Image 1 (cartoon, helix red, strand yellow):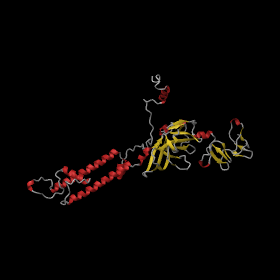
Image 2 (cartoon, helix red, strand yellow; image 1 turned 180 degrees about the vertical axis):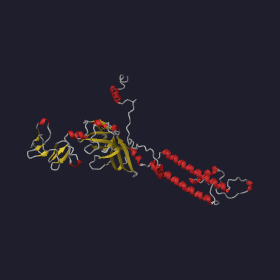
Image 3 (spheres, helix red, strand yellow; image 1 turned 60 degrees about the vertical axis):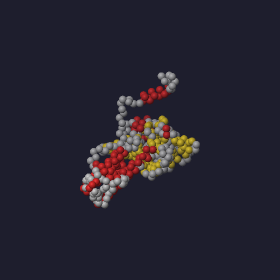
Image 4 (cartoon, one colour; image 1 turned 90 degrees about the vertical axis):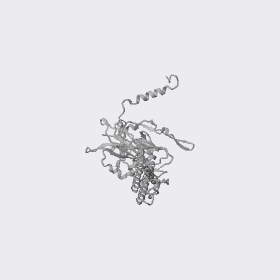
Length: 437
Protein backbone atom coordinates (compact mmCIF):
# COMPACT_ATOMS: atom_id res chain seq x y z
CA UNK A 1 0.00 0.00 0.00
CA UNK A 2 2.83 2.38 0.82
CA UNK A 3 4.45 1.58 -2.51
CA UNK A 4 1.21 2.37 -4.34
CA UNK A 5 1.00 5.77 -2.68
CA UNK A 6 4.57 6.54 -3.66
CA UNK A 7 5.87 6.75 -0.11
CA UNK A 8 8.34 3.92 -0.59
CA UNK A 9 9.86 2.66 -3.85
CA UNK A 10 8.87 -0.70 -5.25
CA UNK A 11 12.48 -1.84 -5.23
CA UNK A 12 12.53 -1.64 -1.45
CA UNK A 13 9.82 -4.29 -1.11
CA UNK A 14 11.36 -6.47 -3.81
CA UNK A 15 14.68 -6.35 -1.98
CA UNK A 16 13.05 -7.20 1.32
CA UNK A 17 11.21 -10.16 -0.22
CA UNK A 18 14.44 -11.44 -1.73
CA UNK A 19 16.22 -11.15 1.61
CA UNK A 20 13.40 -12.89 3.47
CA UNK A 21 13.39 -15.77 1.00
CA UNK A 22 17.11 -16.40 1.53
CA UNK A 23 16.89 -16.29 5.33
CA UNK A 24 16.61 -19.62 7.15
CA UNK A 25 13.45 -20.64 8.92
CA UNK A 26 13.19 -18.73 12.17
CA UNK A 27 11.18 -21.49 13.84
CA UNK A 28 14.02 -23.98 13.39
CA UNK A 29 17.11 -22.52 15.04
CA UNK A 30 20.40 -23.31 13.39
CA UNK A 31 22.80 -25.48 15.34
CA UNK A 32 25.60 -23.26 16.57
CA UNK A 33 29.10 -24.55 16.03
CA UNK A 34 31.47 -24.78 18.96
CA UNK A 35 34.45 -22.48 18.89
CA UNK A 36 37.48 -21.97 21.11
CA UNK A 37 37.65 -18.16 20.83
CA UNK A 38 34.53 -16.03 20.69
CA UNK A 39 34.16 -13.03 18.43
CA UNK A 40 34.87 -10.80 21.42
CA UNK A 41 38.18 -12.57 22.10
CA UNK A 42 37.30 -14.48 25.27
CA UNK A 43 38.14 -18.14 25.71
CA UNK A 44 35.13 -20.39 25.13
CA UNK A 45 36.32 -23.39 27.15
CA UNK A 46 34.53 -24.60 30.29
CA UNK A 47 36.71 -26.30 32.93
CA UNK A 48 34.88 -28.99 34.87
CA UNK A 49 35.67 -31.46 37.66
CA UNK A 50 38.68 -29.54 38.96
CA UNK A 51 39.61 -31.37 42.15
CA UNK A 52 42.52 -29.21 43.30
CA UNK A 53 40.61 -26.01 43.98
CA UNK A 54 43.18 -24.93 46.55
CA UNK A 55 45.65 -24.01 43.85
CA UNK A 56 43.64 -20.85 43.16
CA UNK A 57 44.14 -19.71 46.77
CA UNK A 58 47.91 -19.95 46.40
CA UNK A 59 47.71 -16.96 44.04
CA UNK A 60 45.07 -14.83 45.74
CA UNK A 61 45.96 -11.61 43.97
CA UNK A 62 45.53 -13.05 40.46
CA UNK A 63 42.32 -14.73 41.55
CA UNK A 64 40.98 -11.41 42.83
CA UNK A 65 41.91 -9.63 39.61
CA UNK A 66 40.23 -12.32 37.48
CA UNK A 67 36.96 -12.04 39.41
CA UNK A 68 34.10 -9.91 38.18
CA UNK A 69 33.61 -6.42 39.58
CA UNK A 70 30.56 -7.30 41.65
CA UNK A 71 32.35 -10.23 43.25
CA UNK A 72 35.47 -8.17 43.99
CA UNK A 73 33.49 -5.35 45.59
CA UNK A 74 31.53 -7.86 47.66
CA UNK A 75 34.73 -9.46 48.93
CA UNK A 76 36.35 -6.12 49.83
CA UNK A 77 33.23 -4.87 51.62
CA UNK A 78 32.98 -8.11 53.56
CA UNK A 79 36.68 -7.92 54.47
CA UNK A 80 36.31 -4.40 55.91
CA UNK A 81 33.16 -5.16 57.85
CA UNK A 82 34.56 -8.41 59.23
CA UNK A 83 37.78 -6.72 60.36
CA UNK A 84 35.82 -3.91 62.04
CA UNK A 85 33.58 -6.41 63.82
CA UNK A 86 36.53 -8.56 64.90
CA UNK A 87 38.46 -5.71 66.48
CA UNK A 88 35.28 -4.23 67.95
CA UNK A 89 34.88 -7.50 69.83
CA UNK A 90 38.53 -7.27 70.95
CA UNK A 91 38.08 -3.71 72.27
CA UNK A 92 34.86 -4.65 74.03
CA UNK A 93 36.54 -7.65 75.72
CA UNK A 94 39.44 -5.45 76.87
CA UNK A 95 37.03 -2.95 78.35
CA UNK A 96 35.00 -5.72 80.00
CA UNK A 97 38.10 -7.41 81.49
CA UNK A 98 39.42 -4.12 82.85
CA UNK A 99 36.06 -3.20 84.36
CA UNK A 100 35.41 -0.18 82.21
CA UNK A 101 31.86 -1.28 81.43
CA UNK A 102 30.70 -1.23 85.07
CA UNK A 103 28.17 1.61 85.53
CA UNK A 104 29.26 4.22 88.04
CA UNK A 105 27.23 6.83 89.88
CA UNK A 106 28.34 10.45 90.04
CA UNK A 107 28.64 10.40 93.82
CA UNK A 108 31.14 7.53 93.67
CA UNK A 109 33.78 9.87 92.34
CA UNK A 110 36.26 9.25 89.53
CA UNK A 111 37.08 5.59 88.96
CA UNK A 112 40.22 3.94 87.64
CA UNK A 113 41.69 5.02 84.33
CA UNK A 114 40.07 2.95 81.51
CA UNK A 115 41.98 1.25 78.71
CA UNK A 116 39.94 3.15 76.12
CA UNK A 117 37.97 6.19 77.07
CA UNK A 118 34.27 6.60 76.31
CA UNK A 119 33.56 2.91 75.65
CA UNK A 120 30.37 1.87 77.40
CA UNK A 121 28.89 -0.77 75.06
CA UNK A 122 29.58 -2.88 72.01
CA UNK A 123 28.29 -0.10 69.76
CA UNK A 124 30.84 2.35 71.08
CA UNK A 125 33.55 -0.31 70.69
CA UNK A 126 32.52 -0.81 67.06
CA UNK A 127 32.72 2.94 66.37
CA UNK A 128 36.17 3.07 67.96
CA UNK A 129 37.30 0.13 65.76
CA UNK A 130 36.27 2.06 62.62
CA UNK A 131 38.06 5.22 63.83
CA UNK A 132 41.28 3.27 64.44
CA UNK A 133 41.36 1.36 61.13
CA UNK A 134 40.45 4.24 58.82
CA UNK A 135 42.32 6.83 60.99
CA UNK A 136 39.33 9.15 61.37
CA UNK A 137 40.09 10.25 64.93
CA UNK A 138 37.00 12.15 66.12
CA UNK A 139 38.70 12.80 69.49
CA UNK A 140 36.05 11.38 71.80
CA UNK A 141 37.71 7.98 72.27
CA UNK A 142 41.39 7.17 72.65
CA UNK A 143 43.74 4.54 74.01
CA UNK A 144 45.41 5.28 77.37
CA UNK A 145 48.64 4.03 78.95
CA UNK A 146 46.74 1.89 81.43
CA UNK A 147 46.62 -1.30 79.29
CA UNK A 148 49.70 -2.46 77.29
CA UNK A 149 47.49 -5.09 75.63
CA UNK A 150 45.30 -2.34 74.17
CA UNK A 151 48.38 -0.74 72.58
CA UNK A 152 49.25 -4.11 70.99
CA UNK A 153 45.74 -4.50 69.58
CA UNK A 154 45.95 -0.96 68.19
CA UNK A 155 49.17 -1.79 66.33
CA UNK A 156 47.79 -5.05 64.90
CA UNK A 157 44.61 -3.38 63.66
CA UNK A 158 46.55 -0.61 61.92
CA UNK A 159 48.80 -3.11 60.14
CA UNK A 160 45.87 -5.28 59.05
CA UNK A 161 43.97 -2.23 57.81
CA UNK A 162 46.96 -1.14 55.69
CA UNK A 163 47.21 -4.62 54.14
CA UNK A 164 43.52 -4.67 53.21
CA UNK A 165 43.77 -1.18 51.68
CA UNK A 166 46.89 -2.10 49.69
CA UNK A 167 45.33 -5.26 48.26
CA UNK A 168 42.11 -3.43 47.39
CA UNK A 169 43.89 -0.56 45.65
CA UNK A 170 46.18 -2.94 43.75
CA UNK A 171 43.29 -5.07 42.52
CA UNK A 172 41.26 -2.04 41.48
CA UNK A 173 44.23 -0.59 39.58
CA UNK A 174 45.00 -3.86 37.82
CA UNK A 175 41.37 -4.40 36.87
CA UNK A 176 41.05 -0.91 35.42
CA UNK A 177 44.43 -1.04 33.62
CA UNK A 178 44.11 -4.51 32.13
CA UNK A 179 45.44 -4.97 28.62
CA UNK A 180 42.14 -6.34 27.34
CA UNK A 181 40.53 -2.94 27.98
CA UNK A 182 42.69 -1.46 25.23
CA UNK A 183 41.61 -4.30 22.96
CA UNK A 184 38.01 -3.03 23.10
CA UNK A 185 38.92 -0.32 20.56
CA UNK A 186 40.60 -2.80 18.19
CA UNK A 187 37.99 -4.12 15.77
CA UNK A 188 38.03 -7.03 13.36
CA UNK A 189 35.76 -7.61 10.41
CA UNK A 190 32.76 -9.78 11.17
CA UNK A 191 33.53 -12.08 8.24
CA UNK A 192 36.67 -13.19 6.49
CA UNK A 193 36.83 -13.59 2.72
CA UNK A 194 38.61 -15.77 0.19
CA UNK A 195 39.23 -13.98 -3.10
CA UNK A 196 41.87 -14.06 -5.85
CA UNK A 197 44.82 -11.73 -5.39
CA UNK A 198 47.70 -11.69 -7.87
CA UNK A 199 46.36 -14.86 -9.46
CA UNK A 200 46.22 -16.89 -6.25
CA UNK A 201 43.31 -17.55 -3.86
CA UNK A 202 43.91 -15.53 -0.71
CA UNK A 203 42.37 -15.62 2.75
CA UNK A 204 41.77 -12.05 4.00
CA UNK A 205 40.24 -10.20 6.93
CA UNK A 206 40.29 -6.57 8.07
CA UNK A 207 41.54 -5.09 11.34
CA UNK A 208 41.39 -1.48 12.55
CA UNK A 209 42.17 0.70 15.55
CA UNK A 210 39.62 3.28 16.67
CA UNK A 211 42.03 5.26 18.84
CA UNK A 212 44.58 7.80 17.67
CA UNK A 213 47.21 6.44 20.07
CA UNK A 214 49.00 3.69 18.19
CA UNK A 215 49.98 0.14 19.03
CA UNK A 216 53.77 -0.16 19.08
CA UNK A 217 55.43 -3.26 17.58
CA UNK A 218 52.10 -4.73 16.53
CA UNK A 219 52.22 -8.30 15.25
CA UNK A 220 49.51 -10.56 13.82
CA UNK A 221 49.52 -14.31 14.23
CA UNK A 222 47.15 -16.74 12.53
CA UNK A 223 46.46 -20.28 13.65
CA UNK A 224 44.20 -23.00 12.32
CA UNK A 225 42.61 -25.30 14.88
CA UNK A 226 41.09 -28.45 13.48
CA UNK A 227 40.39 -32.03 14.43
CA UNK A 228 42.86 -34.48 12.90
CA UNK A 229 43.44 -38.24 12.94
CA UNK A 230 46.96 -39.69 12.86
CA UNK A 231 48.09 -42.67 10.81
CA UNK A 232 47.80 -44.84 13.94
CA UNK A 233 44.16 -43.83 14.38
CA UNK A 234 44.74 -41.40 17.26
CA UNK A 235 42.24 -38.56 17.29
CA UNK A 236 43.76 -35.16 18.04
CA UNK A 237 40.84 -32.83 18.89
CA UNK A 238 42.98 -29.68 18.95
CA UNK A 239 45.66 -29.54 16.28
CA UNK A 240 47.19 -26.07 15.97
CA UNK A 241 48.91 -25.06 12.74
CA UNK A 242 50.46 -21.63 12.14
CA UNK A 243 49.57 -19.65 9.02
CA UNK A 244 52.09 -17.35 7.39
CA UNK A 245 50.87 -13.79 7.00
CA UNK A 246 51.58 -12.19 3.64
CA UNK A 247 54.24 -9.57 4.34
CA UNK A 248 57.13 -8.45 2.12
CA UNK A 249 59.28 -8.07 5.23
CA UNK A 250 59.05 -11.79 5.98
CA UNK A 251 57.60 -11.07 9.42
CA UNK A 252 54.22 -10.74 11.10
CA UNK A 253 54.75 -7.09 12.07
CA UNK A 254 52.25 -4.47 10.92
CA UNK A 255 51.95 -0.69 11.14
CA UNK A 256 48.38 -0.16 12.27
CA UNK A 257 48.05 3.51 11.36
CA UNK A 258 44.82 2.80 9.45
CA UNK A 259 42.57 -0.24 8.89
CA UNK A 260 44.53 -2.98 7.15
CA UNK A 261 43.55 -6.08 5.22
CA UNK A 262 45.62 -8.97 6.54
CA UNK A 263 46.06 -11.64 3.88
CA UNK A 264 47.38 -15.17 3.60
CA UNK A 265 48.15 -16.61 0.16
CA UNK A 266 46.74 -20.11 -0.15
CA UNK A 267 49.47 -22.17 -1.80
CA UNK A 268 51.30 -25.40 -1.29
CA UNK A 269 52.08 -25.90 2.38
CA UNK A 270 49.11 -23.84 3.54
CA UNK A 271 46.53 -25.55 5.82
CA UNK A 272 43.85 -24.17 3.48
CA UNK A 273 45.43 -25.61 0.32
CA UNK A 274 42.68 -28.23 -0.19
CA UNK A 275 39.80 -25.94 0.81
CA UNK A 276 37.16 -25.37 -1.89
CA UNK A 277 33.83 -23.57 -2.02
CA UNK A 278 31.92 -26.86 -1.69
CA UNK A 279 33.98 -28.26 1.18
CA UNK A 280 34.07 -24.98 3.12
CA UNK A 281 30.67 -25.48 4.75
CA UNK A 282 31.51 -28.99 5.94
CA UNK A 283 35.01 -28.22 7.21
CA UNK A 284 35.61 -28.55 10.96
CA UNK A 285 38.17 -25.81 11.48
CA UNK A 286 38.59 -22.49 13.23
CA UNK A 287 41.01 -19.74 12.23
CA UNK A 288 42.21 -17.80 15.27
CA UNK A 289 43.62 -14.29 14.90
CA UNK A 290 45.93 -12.92 17.62
CA UNK A 291 47.09 -9.30 17.52
CA UNK A 292 49.76 -8.32 20.05
CA UNK A 293 51.51 -5.04 20.73
CA UNK A 294 52.48 -2.43 23.29
CA UNK A 295 50.10 0.38 24.20
CA UNK A 296 51.74 3.69 23.38
CA UNK A 297 50.28 5.64 26.31
CA UNK A 298 50.76 3.11 29.13
CA UNK A 299 53.51 0.80 27.86
CA UNK A 300 51.44 -2.27 28.76
CA UNK A 301 51.53 -5.27 26.46
CA UNK A 302 48.07 -5.98 25.08
CA UNK A 303 46.50 -8.76 23.06
CA UNK A 304 43.33 -8.77 20.96
CA UNK A 305 41.80 -12.00 19.69
CA UNK A 306 39.03 -13.18 17.42
CA UNK A 307 38.26 -16.25 15.33
CA UNK A 308 36.54 -17.26 12.12
CA UNK A 309 34.61 -20.48 11.61
CA UNK A 310 33.54 -21.77 8.17
CA UNK A 311 30.15 -20.05 8.45
CA UNK A 312 31.95 -16.69 8.73
CA UNK A 313 34.26 -17.16 5.73
CA UNK A 314 32.84 -15.80 2.46
CA UNK A 315 34.02 -17.40 -0.78
CA UNK A 316 34.46 -15.20 -3.83
CA UNK A 317 34.15 -11.82 -2.14
CA UNK A 318 36.55 -9.01 -1.27
CA UNK A 319 36.47 -5.98 1.00
CA UNK A 320 35.52 -2.58 -0.32
CA UNK A 321 37.87 0.37 -0.01
CA UNK A 322 37.23 2.64 2.97
CA UNK A 323 40.18 5.04 2.57
CA UNK A 324 39.84 8.42 0.91
CA UNK A 325 41.99 11.54 0.64
CA UNK A 326 40.40 14.81 1.68
CA UNK A 327 42.08 18.16 2.28
CA UNK A 328 45.57 16.74 2.32
CA UNK A 329 44.91 13.91 4.74
CA UNK A 330 43.44 10.43 4.68
CA UNK A 331 39.99 9.66 6.04
CA UNK A 332 38.48 6.31 6.99
CA UNK A 333 34.79 5.49 6.59
CA UNK A 334 34.09 2.89 9.28
CA UNK A 335 30.51 2.45 8.10
CA UNK A 336 31.95 0.28 5.29
CA UNK A 337 34.43 -1.54 7.48
CA UNK A 338 32.97 -5.01 6.93
CA UNK A 339 31.31 -4.48 3.54
CA UNK A 340 32.23 -6.89 0.77
CA UNK A 341 31.55 -7.17 -2.96
CA UNK A 342 31.42 -10.34 -5.10
CA UNK A 343 34.27 -11.13 -7.48
CA UNK A 344 34.72 -13.72 -10.19
CA UNK A 345 36.43 -16.74 -8.69
CA UNK A 346 36.57 -20.45 -9.34
CA UNK A 347 34.97 -22.76 -6.79
CA UNK A 348 37.93 -25.16 -6.96
CA UNK A 349 40.52 -25.38 -4.25
CA UNK A 350 44.05 -24.09 -4.70
CA UNK A 351 45.30 -27.63 -5.05
CA UNK A 352 42.80 -28.41 -7.80
CA UNK A 353 43.67 -25.19 -9.58
CA UNK A 354 47.35 -26.06 -9.52
CA UNK A 355 46.64 -29.52 -10.90
CA UNK A 356 44.56 -28.14 -13.72
CA UNK A 357 47.25 -25.60 -14.55
CA UNK A 358 49.98 -28.20 -14.84
CA UNK A 359 51.76 -27.97 -11.50
CA UNK A 360 53.36 -31.25 -10.49
CA UNK A 361 53.24 -32.47 -6.91
CA UNK A 362 57.00 -32.95 -6.78
CA UNK A 363 57.67 -29.64 -8.59
CA UNK A 364 59.77 -27.12 -6.72
CA UNK A 365 62.67 -28.20 -4.51
CA UNK A 366 62.19 -27.61 -0.82
CA UNK A 367 58.42 -27.43 -1.15
CA UNK A 368 58.44 -23.96 -2.76
CA UNK A 369 55.80 -23.40 -5.39
CA UNK A 370 57.31 -22.29 -8.67
CA UNK A 371 54.29 -21.37 -10.74
CA UNK A 372 51.25 -22.56 -12.59
CA UNK A 373 51.46 -21.26 -16.16
CA UNK A 374 53.88 -19.79 -18.70
CA UNK A 375 53.45 -16.15 -19.67
CA UNK A 376 55.75 -13.45 -21.02
CA UNK A 377 57.90 -11.96 -18.26
CA UNK A 378 60.96 -10.14 -19.49
CA UNK A 379 64.42 -10.70 -20.86
CA UNK A 380 66.14 -13.72 -19.38
CA UNK A 381 63.33 -15.29 -17.33
CA UNK A 382 60.13 -17.29 -17.39
CA UNK A 383 57.09 -16.19 -15.44
CA UNK A 384 54.46 -18.60 -14.24
CA UNK A 385 51.35 -17.07 -12.77
CA UNK A 386 53.12 -13.90 -11.71
CA UNK A 387 56.21 -15.58 -10.24
CA UNK A 388 59.55 -15.21 -12.06
CA UNK A 389 62.21 -17.90 -11.95
CA UNK A 390 65.52 -17.81 -13.77
CA UNK A 391 65.89 -20.28 -16.60
CA UNK A 392 69.35 -21.35 -15.52
CA UNK A 393 68.41 -22.44 -12.00
CA UNK A 394 64.70 -23.28 -12.04
CA UNK A 395 63.47 -26.82 -12.52
CA UNK A 396 60.84 -26.22 -15.16
CA UNK A 397 58.15 -28.71 -16.09
CA UNK A 398 59.55 -29.06 -19.60
CA UNK A 399 63.06 -29.77 -20.92
CA UNK A 400 65.35 -27.98 -23.40
CA UNK A 401 66.88 -29.57 -26.49
CA UNK A 402 69.12 -28.30 -29.26
CA UNK A 403 66.28 -28.18 -31.78
CA UNK A 404 63.88 -26.42 -29.49
CA UNK A 405 61.79 -27.09 -26.39
CA UNK A 406 60.09 -30.48 -26.17
CA UNK A 407 57.42 -31.53 -23.72
CA UNK A 408 56.59 -35.19 -23.33
CA UNK A 409 53.24 -36.29 -21.98
CA UNK A 410 50.33 -38.53 -22.52
CA UNK A 411 47.97 -37.64 -25.36
CA UNK A 412 44.65 -39.27 -26.02
CA UNK A 413 44.55 -42.01 -28.67
CA UNK A 414 48.34 -41.94 -29.09
CA UNK A 415 48.30 -38.89 -31.34
CA UNK A 416 51.06 -36.28 -31.51
CA UNK A 417 50.35 -32.66 -30.92
CA UNK A 418 52.60 -29.72 -31.78
CA UNK A 419 52.35 -26.66 -29.54
CA UNK A 420 54.18 -23.41 -30.11
CA UNK A 421 55.88 -21.87 -27.09
CA UNK A 422 57.41 -18.46 -26.82
CA UNK A 423 60.76 -18.01 -25.13
CA UNK A 424 60.77 -14.99 -22.88
CA UNK A 425 62.96 -12.08 -23.92
CA UNK A 426 63.10 -12.79 -27.65
CA UNK A 427 61.05 -11.50 -30.51
CA UNK A 428 60.78 -14.64 -32.59
CA UNK A 429 59.93 -18.24 -32.00
CA UNK A 430 62.86 -20.62 -32.16
CA UNK A 431 61.37 -24.02 -31.71
CA UNK A 432 58.37 -26.21 -31.41
CA UNK A 433 57.36 -28.65 -28.74
CA UNK A 434 56.36 -32.16 -29.64
CA UNK A 435 53.99 -34.10 -27.49
CA UNK A 436 54.63 -37.79 -27.94
CA UNK A 437 53.64 -40.97 -26.14
